[in-house]
Image (cartoon, rainbow, N blue to C red; front, top):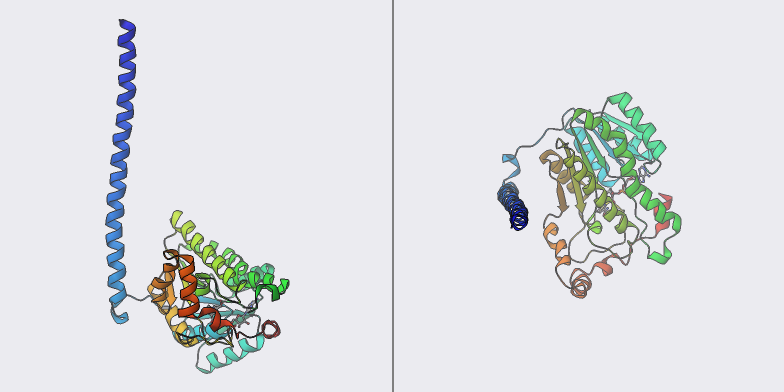
Length: 333
Ligand SMILES: NC(=O)c1ccc[n+]([C@@H]2O[C@H](COP(=O)([O-])OP(=O)(O)OC[C@H]3O[C@@H](n4cnc5c(N)ncnc54)[C@H](O)[C@@H]3O)[C@@H](O)[C@H]2O)c1
């Protein structure tokens, strides 16, 4: 009888322990769900309100006296960024391979009474990046804003892409971000402030004709940016801001020969203005134009064959890209 009683007590105790654990687990989940619901309501409301609040009513950070480094800053969007940031009294640093274009830009900016700091750097070469980063730190101290803007495109179908151009595209469009971030992030972490801006592309959200190298490299760039964002947030570096910019085609020459059917090419100065606004607002993710942010994810919800039909018949993506200019011109640039 005693044995039965002992066994009963044991089973009851185990059952009680299991029940307690289950109840605690349910309470834990309910608390999580309540917090998540509250956060969802708060963040969605915040986004909706901020979206419809005119810029002049929104809090904007100043870039005055901030050290801003722009890679590929002598090219289309880069130079528009440099000019506008210099006019806002930021200390602008441009890294580019194209010395002549940098000299011209420096002359233009200095003729307006502002300063520009230029360094010839090949961002695809990590030793060059680390060396130049040391020089910038010695000359200007730690940087406040890093804009990873340099990019190249080849514009050929896969079998026509020379191997070295595929490698070069990845080195410039993706790997360079590792080198620049590794060079400047430690200072940002030490000072618990900073801002990293990544130039992605809408082709990084949707595979594009003649862009097996470029589009894939931009997908990788977006993955790099988002993963780094998660790492920084996980480790409490909320004061290091990150902004991902994904623009449509821009009239800089990079996509010369393309003939967009539905949306006109963007102008580099408009893209630069939007990027600066995003930096000043600490926006996390920006597509240009903005409505495409809601359109592109639809590809995940519709059948793939319908996605292709929309791409070919409505957006006419492949047809727009057919005439894209030859890679040799890029190589020679
Ligand atoms: N032009 C577009 O349609 C478009 C669309 C979406 C995204 N983007 C992205 O925007 C960014 C800027 O594009 P853009 O149109 O102004 O390009 P651009 O060709 O006008 O300028 C790019 C600049 O990067 C420099 N550069 C290239 N390789 C370099 C290297 N290894 N090291 C240092 N500098 C290097 C070039 O000398 C040039 O000054 C790129 O990342 C591009 O992928 C462009």
